[in-house]
Length: 253
Length: 253
Image (cartoon, rainbow over all chains, first blue to last red; front, top):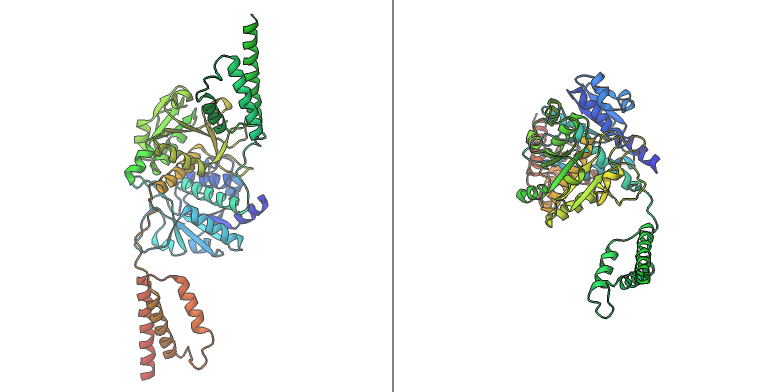
């Protein structure tokens, strides 16, 4: 399954266009690698390679080493069947605008069907120009705070690669991995717990079967909400037993 | 509507725990501000404030100025009803694990219902410890490339704030804003276009009504797929008219 994901990601190129700050190239490579993307394209970068590029890559040097340099966007996307630009600004010409999530799903579908895709990120100061967008099928707009739309390029790469990773995982039927949970507890076991609890609270003189009020119902509602796992269940049963033992000793004295 | 979004975001605190690199604090503030988040909490930061913090904040100084310092996580989340930690690693104790998207939706629902929420981000080198996670109701896991899970803190803040912004926009019924599209074109107008096209191609001796083959059907399928807007429609009609005029002149000569 992971192999399928890698095969899809190998057909997606992240293209940084006229990026001026070397740190942004390194940080973009790192952002790509954390999400499993591999192919970096650089259209006329300001400074590349360099110490600041590598420092901010923080171990994603393989991405930098394999990065392809291009003289123009046209050259960078010549083998691609689906090209998206990223932008946070309105344009005079109305390019179709997609949000990052739908764009990522469309790209994953396209590369799974045999296509090749590129996503362009513009220069820090001005973003992609209308001329740059001429190679694009649509513009991906990352929704931002209108008053401060100053999304860093590597941050934008991170968001897009994150959405690609999510869409790719979904496509491959992969799940977010947490540690394996302890076995769950059945309703029958919970019923035993509630009997034990009632008995224990009676031993502690906290529950009076003659005047039950809503106590047990409230406790049942509370503990049902907890979805106890087997370990937690055993801890609670142990605590009840210890309390019963203490109550018994107390009586014996 | 934007006011509702702001009101919700004011009840979400991004808490950086023992962050060592000042640049990461600045970049996190910038990431927050691009997505409309305001409340930054710092638990025992390495260097704060400082020139490198401000440099990487790139204009999000108001977030830094308003940042609250805390001696402990407990202090940082004392007023919060819903606290999540972020982690990319499996833990011995099984905390409930959520993906960023569902966590963001849960947080937005909680603050819309009057709650207050905090999201913790651990130190660069080690992430949040099990002791740190004791204040948390669940752990948010950002799915990453297993071979290189080295997600930068500011990049993680960017992803989480992006998901919060998406969930908040959805909750408030706000849409990703593109430029207003030109009016669409009706089927009746498209039918006129196809008549015009046939007439024009006949004038150009490219279409022979005696042997129509599949030409018009293919062109209709192609142009229907384009979803022309009114401006584009007028350009095509203009081009057809110009071609017809040229054909006519040619015949006249």
